[in-house]
Image 1 (cartoon, helix red, strand yellow):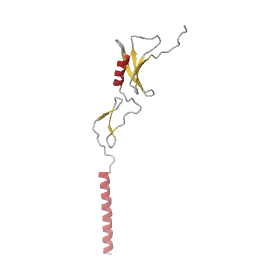
Image 2 (image 1 turned 60 degrees about the vertical axis):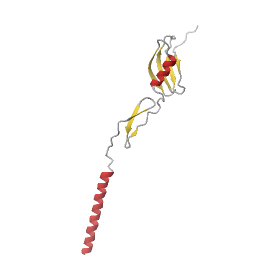
Image 3 (image 1 turned 180 degrees about the vertical axis):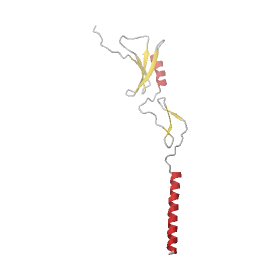
Image 4 (image 1 turned 60 degrees about the horizontal axis):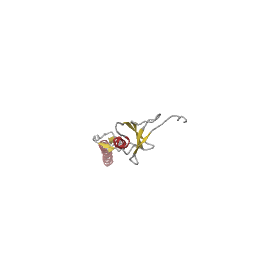
Amino acid sequence: MRKILFWIIVGIGTVTLLVIGLGIYKFNFTNDDIHIACTEEAKLCPDGSAVGRTGPMCEFAPCPHGRSMMTQEQARTIAERTCIKGGDALGPGTYNENSKTWWFDANLNATREGCNPACVVSETTRTAEINWRCTGLIPPR
């Protein structure tokens, strides 16, 4: 009877130690509530925006999709070189994702009645041209 009692106590003690050991291991090494602080670096995206590090592995967030591979400053330089002559000026730029073009309102010395000129820069060809954006009915001659 003493031998059986001894082995029961040893078995209970072993199971108790295993349960305590697994609990300590799980708490110390698999705690999902631990937050890791990422460094405050930034990655510059082709559209001129920046993304920081995020997630459990502190990887850079993806750059925005559907954005221009040319920054507004690069497009403005092309627009100024092509569309602007003495005294003309460009307004703020807008990117069109469908046509992959940058549009700058242009204040040109030469105008056309009923038209609102814009300097349009193509992202693919890196060239610019004036789009007169004329509206309304043209009266017959």
